Every structure is written in C-alpha cells, then in structure tokens.
Image (cartoon, rainbow, N blue to C red; front, side, top):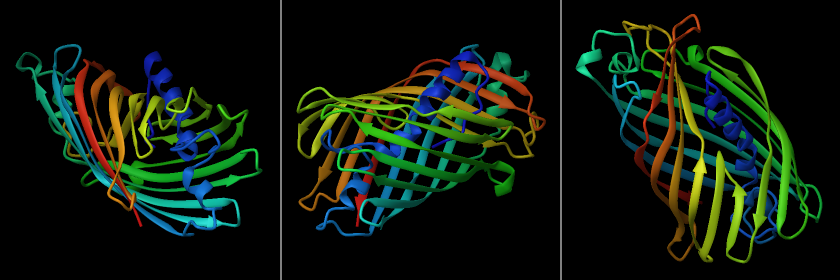
Amino acid sequence: MKTIIPCSARSILAMSLFLGAIAPMALAQDGGADRAVDPEAQEAVRPERPGVTITLNPSVWYSAERDYDTGVGDVETTKLGGEVTIGLPIGDRGRLNLGVGAFTTDYDVTVNPAFAAGVNAATIGTQFDEVQELSFNAMYTRVLDEQGTALFVGGRIGSASEGGVDFDDALVWGAFGGLSWRVNEQFTFGLGVGVFSRLEDDVRIIPLPQFRYTIDERWTLMSEGPGVKLDYAWKDDMHMGVFARFEGDDFRIETTNTIVPGGAVSNSMVPITYYLDTKLGDSKNIALFAEVGVVVAGETEIFNAAGNVVVEEDIDPGVFAGLSLKIRF
C-alpha cells in the first residue's frame, strides 16, 4: 500500500478506489468461491498445511516515456525491489502476516527547452535522485465460521524519500479493518474502514468495500488489490485476464532541491493491463506474474515544505510492463 496526497477531483476518486481495495489485498483469492479470506489464512487451518511460511516477492516495474500534459517535458520511471513476508498461524482459524518491503524508484525526467527557465514538474523532476522506500506491515485474518465469514485487521508504517532525508521526515502510517461475508457459493462481499496519514495533510478516513463474483468455473470478477480484475482460469495453475487498478506513491524531496527543498511529491495513475499469473515447477511454490498494458489518468502534484501545492500536472497515457515472482518456503 502507498499513501497518496491528491488534490484534484480525479485524484480523490482514484484515492477512494485505491483505499477501497487495500482490505481486499488481505482477502484476495486464488481459488473457488468458498475461499472468502486470505488464501494463507484459509490454508492455515488445514492439517496438511505447514504452520509457518516465508514468502519472497521480488518485482520490477517499468513505465515508458510519458509527456506532461502542458508540454513542459516527459517522465520515464523504473521501480525495483521486493517484499519478505512471514505467515504465522494463530489458533485454529487465524493467521498473522508480518512483512517488510524495500523499493527503489528511478525517475528519468526530461525538460522541454522552451520551459527550462520555469517552475514546473519537469524542472523540479530533473533534480530528483533515486527514491528509496521502506515499509513494515502486519495483517491478521481470521475465519469466524464455516459459512466463510472472516475478519481482517492490519496496519503499516513506512517512509519514502530521496537520499539524504531522515526516515522520520517522510514517515506515514495506516490502519484498517473490517469483515467479509459469503452470501452464497458465487458471491462474497465485505465492508471495512481505514485511517491513513499523509505527508502534507490531515489523516483520511475511508470506507473499504470489496466484492467477488464467480461467474462460472473459469471466470471471476473481483476487487483485488487496488482495483478490479476479470480473471480467467485457463488451467488450475495458470490464470490470465484484464486488471485495472489505481497506483500511487508519495515521497519527500531532498533539501538540496533548488526549487522546492524539503517538499513532497505525489504521483497517481491507473494501469490497465493484460496479465498472466502462473505457477512454475513441480513444487508449485514459485509463481510468476507478468503484465503489459497502458497507464492512464496520470497526475503529479508537488508540494513545498510548508505543504502548499506548487505544481499540479496531468501526464499523458503511456505503455508499461511489470514482472514479479512469488517464492514460498
């Protein structure tokens, strides 16, 4: 999960989609409609399932050159990193997941020479160093009854900034929780609430809806992660489909920036992607997720150290690709 600082009406709508899908990350499913909670929490109650798991999730994400809408320049990004999660059974029906993530994002910003003397997203962005992100998170899920009612509660603390910025100067936190219910074998829904801090604004309280509708034995429509997915089960260990989701990040700017020293940046976008999700090898403990698509609804907001908006820029659509592994021990 990333914390966003949107100001425009479009960003507020995107923020609601993003936060509304954070809880489903803990309730996302790989299997049939009877799995109304986090798959690892469901598997934790099975006698044959080892109690403790360790999961590695390295990933890389590349967004090709995209123009700022006002013509001041363009931006290209590459994000590389990974997460480590430890899953622990709690009682007969519960599971606690503890994780740490570390990512590096490289911004390659080019200025249109006609705007090189102004204060805009490109002239500020050309000074960006690599952005380092570190986060710690916890999630508890519990199956409450045989009908699939489930509880989720979690939180995170993290920091994202350019090099040279102290961890606590870019600190953000979040907490969320709620319940999910299985209406029948085809439909599951859930409700919750989340509270999230932001770098340059007050905390935001957001409702967290979710849903999962099994159309037939192969097709499923669901809210998973920060978005909506139409999934097709080609085989038991191979899925593909279309996925539209909100993504965003905010980070603290280094004090050496000559235009907005010590300020903050908020980026938001909606990738629409075709994906392939498949398990590898006979052990089925390694999964590959590959995607390619187009990024739309891009926006960048830049704040000064006092929390005032200095620049707000829309970003034109562009292509992207991503690749990640999920390795479970």
